[in-house]
Amino acid sequence: MTGGAARRTAARGWPLRVAAAVLVLGAALLPGASPAAVAAPSTGTPTAEVSTGQAGAGGTVTVSGRGWRPKALLTLLICGQNMIGGTNSCANGDGRAVTTDAHGAFRTALPVAEPPKPCPCVVHVAAVTGAAAADDVPFAVAGHPVAPLPRQDTGARLAVVSGPELTGGDNLLTWFGAPPRRRLTFTVGNTGAVPATDPVFKVGTAHGVFAPEWEDRQWRGTVPAGKKARVALDVELAAGAHGDYRVSATYGGKLLVEQAWDVGRPWGVTLFWTLLCLVVATAVFRAGMAAVDRVRPRTAPAPRTTGPAHGGAGPRTPGRLRVRPRTLRGGPDGGTAPADRPAALPWYTPDTAPSATTSTAPPTAEGSS
Image 1 (cartoon, rainbow, N blue to C red):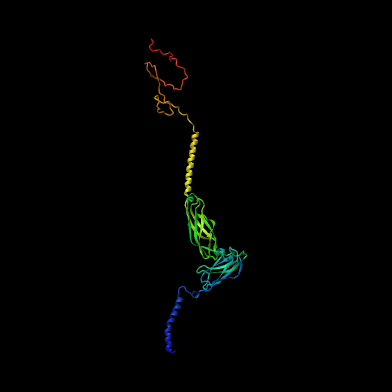
Image 2 (image 1 turned 90 degrees about the vertical axis):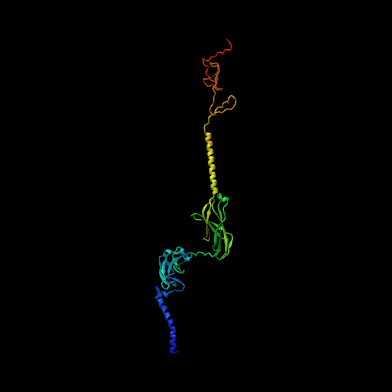
């Protein structure tokens, strides 16, 4: 290549060299950027290690790891039962937190504590921020009980697809206090590996703030693996129940559905008790009046009086005898004169003798001289 050709090639390549230099300078001047951070990104699977495989409670072990995200916050816990039950099986009160360095590595001391579950135990390391990342390292706590791992349930697993819905209504008997009945329907899907044949659900009814009362309800049918089916379960309350209720259904210890149920008041019962109170009050009143009438003293009836002279029935005054005055014959003027005393009653005869002034001589015959 001649000198002129070399100069022309260099002239064509200088823009590329200038652009590369500008990019490098800009990366170096970015705010908050550091060479370590730019070159940091850690790759690979996050791993952890424990300085010893066994230690007693009260001791300390060293836990280290690499492959984690730079500047990530991690938690370290000692868990029993291989952490099958989640963090509920870990000694959460004695855990530690640590932040990884710029290369995604860490090293810290962890106190040994007995977890609430028996061993086999693990040291569980998990990322708190960012994408999920975790690692479990087998570890034995000296003197801590050891028990077999719980059996994993590989059977049918049901999950709700749609629903729930309460179907049915009240009738005349319910209006008079019969137990209210409904049917709880919902659609479930089998996410397990085996079909669910005649599954048994737990149906609970709760009133207000009280805890549910659970009863077993078996559904007759089969839900194939990976399929769904419509489930209908009968729900019944106690006689005379009314108010706000809540109906729930669980399967395998997992809550599937929950539905509110507003139960109307049985007004027929109220009407019955109202009528019963009225009837009883009336009966008591009548019995009391009969008793009072029986013990009340009785008075003698008033005597009857004869009617007028013409034989007609005249008006009578109850309780009083009306006596008409009698006239005496042979008065001083030879006529009749009213008596100066009331006449004696027809049935009354005085016991006294006649007065001495009364003349007993026979009357003189008319026309005698």
